[in-house]
Length: 113
Image 1 (cartoon, one colour):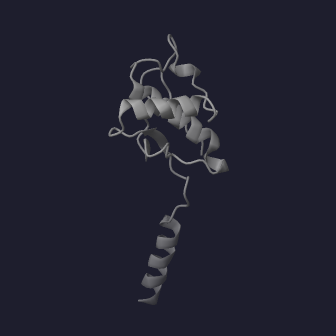
Image 2 (image 1 turned 135 degrees about the vertical axis):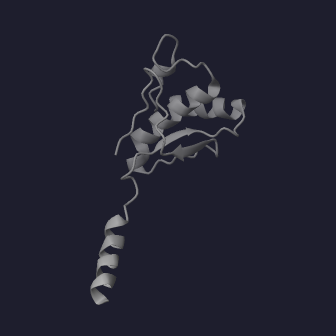
């Protein structure tokens, strides 16, 4: 019986993962209005320091050309770059994290462990 309890304890300890070990992306929350998303994009791509070149016309993440899709790309770029410095995926409640890769076609959303 003691052997079983020790085995269960070891398995429990081994199964606990520290934060950040699983892929996680930051995307726009579906419930956030476009005007709020646009303000968050403006901040992320400006003062926030996100690289938003890929959501420009004729770039791989321009299409679909929606505020929500562009916000998701900008939010994730910011989050991946700065999460190890304490950045969060919040954007004034306009964003959420997901474990589903939002990449599509030639538009690749970066994940940095």
